Length: 482
Image 1: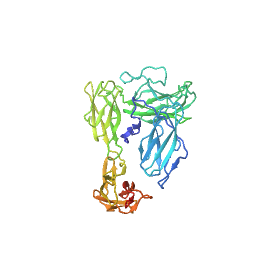
Image 2 (image 1 turned 90 degrees about the vertical axis):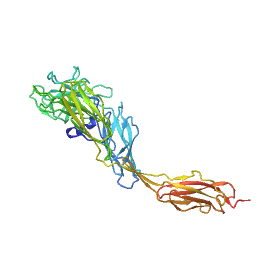
Image 3 (image 1 turned 45 degrees about the vertical axis):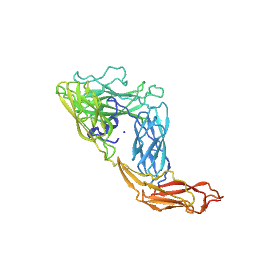
């Protein structure tokens, strides 16, 4: 994914913003060891940490490159099992695909000096089912709720939001490789973000609350805790994590708190109301980065207006229900701010702001040679005493910074031959585009025994960094054998 940040409390949420609904899953693991390596740069040894990580299906993780010389190129031996970016400047994300059994993928990192390090990454099937279910309790008819009754506390039928002051449950299920539930496993629930509390009291005891609580799974592998949105909570996104203590595998869920005011004016609310996205470097704004906004209150349906379609793509212009969302995707152009209007069917209006700014990281710089080109490409054959002219152009380098290219052309080219006893090439220092004269001397044999056949000798043209070799066909023996 491009680099960017979200404002205020929404910043930690960006890696979850690609979810199709409001709930999402994450899981991870780790390991240690020593990498194999080939340090050709002579500087600090190139390394990737952790050196032998373990990750779980569907769960983004990260690796960090140290030493060597950046920027670094990254390769995965199987992108379908473990996706990696093509380049990195240090820490990079890895995304495990779905596997049914332990699968080892080799991740290789090469630095700018050619040093290479390869580490094994073990991808395991996720123990925790790839969802976290929120079951909001019945609250009030005016509080929006999309829950449909279900028979399981951890099935995929649940709420996508909860009102301020409302109670409910969140739950996950842990299973074995065959899909059966694992009972008696300790599952630790944590509040990662948001005005959200976990009930920590035993059944029938006075209510107590905390930000973390551990419960065992039941006979079906279900782990469930009761929760409450803080009665004073404003509209916001909330992140909850459930971790299998024994394996370290965890999942995360995200839902919305809708600010509900008892006997109050429940006006239109949009979560988030401001988003700032940054591009990959200081010269570029983001492209293809999406963010979803959720609309509550007022009188649905809602109509979304996008005043800058050249900068942002609007996924849908009508949101049918309270709690529904619309998505904006950046198109590469910088805009700060873009103000998006949301109108309900009663004529009320709310707005959200999206900023697409350049990044904070300087763009990478690469240098490549300008090829040396010789005209004609096939130098005419030379008999004894004959000569011909060629023209050499090019040479030097092109420096690329972001999307800007700066040529540094060669001002002179160095000319030489491998058989000065057979041919001469003058001048020995030539200006690009000026003629170079090649002459077959009247005496000399290239390859004894004597023969009148044509044989190649080499002409070299260099800019001091790169060298182009041109074969020249010449008479093997001069003077010719009678």
